[in-house]
Image (cartoon, rainbow, N blue to C red):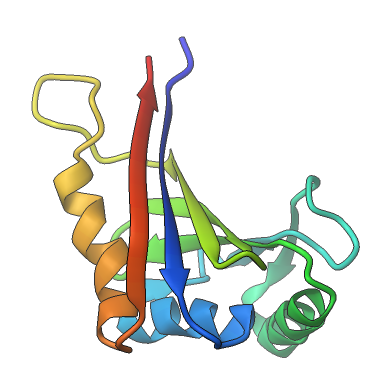
Length: 142
């Protein structure tokens, strides 16, 4: 049985989308998952690809180019010191969708996502940069 869980938010900022990604990397999220970086390549918003962590400059170049082209920046983010992560979609309309897919953290003895674990890690990177979150929604489909 598949489980779909995610958090979507809208924020207010004039920063380019790739700079919003930087907020998360500066806060404790990592691009490195088992030695690879998963992302949506330039010109493609659906088919994920992987690069080696040694190709980090290519990753950031892709972010800048996708941002300039108003394409969705899709990246897997892993929380520091864990194997728990999200697939994050950064959109040019100042919204972000965090698909909670990578070793999803659940409440004890349930299959429900532990949203309280994710929310501070998703909201604080923006808050620390004085970026206002205007709207947030959480969904869980069992």
